[in-house]
Amino acid sequence: MAVAGKGGVGKTTVVGSIARVWARDGVKVLAVDADPASHLHSILEIPVERMPKPISAELDLIEERTGSRPGVETGPFYKLNPKVDDIPDGYSTVGADGVRLMVLGTIRAAGSGCFCPENAVLRGLIDHVILERDEAVIVDMEAGLEQFGRSTCRGVDLLLTVVGPGARSIDTGQRIAKLAADMEVKRVAVVANGVRSAEEEAVVRESLARHSLELFASLPYSESVARADMLGKSVFEVDGNGDWTAAVSRLSDEILSFIG
Image (tube, rainbow, N blue to C red; front, side, top):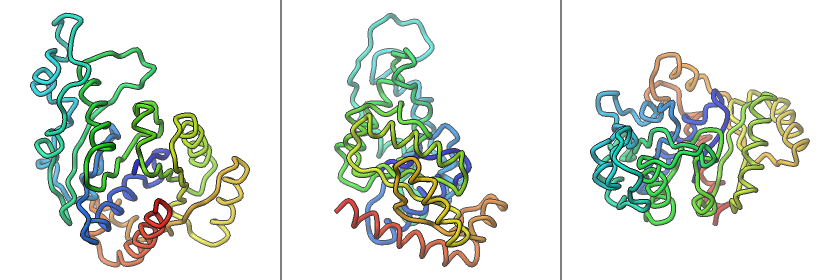
């Protein structure tokens, strides 16, 4: 599953929480941080000093796999399909509840004109974890899908788009949904996060409908999430998080039912 959304809507908290709920249910989970902001480690209670180094910054690894070192003039030739299947286990860290975290770093957009060895590794790695790994994979993405290849997008079981109860985040969600349709993603679901009332949910639903989108599910505003954010902690570390974990568990059940 890939998860996208406008900055500030709580996307990373949703990603980390779903990953931990899955792991608590006995699922082997690989969480992939593909957002350059890289905050997923905090939800998984991995301290900064144990946070895995972004793959895009592993220059020795990239040179070994592609035959070219990023930032160094070594000629125009490098491997376009480098070996990547051992990277998730070797360059990741296990966090709370046994969730394994891998950090990608920056993936250049497909239209940026960047043909570079680090992109070859990152794109091959994304293809591998989405299409070939045998565990549950959840990817915390940037708002756009351009850093994904078309084949990778088609390979996800679900693209979850997180929106907040505001016009700007819903507009971003609409753009993400359009990109997903253009890239032939099989299933797209929109989840509203931080909803405070039935009336607010109705407004979100109506706003999405104007963009020909349906609301798949809602997550309520949670004081425990707000308090965790204020303290710089994972929501699972603060008291009174039962409302949030219960809501995420219900969302997880709905997701699994939706994808069959």
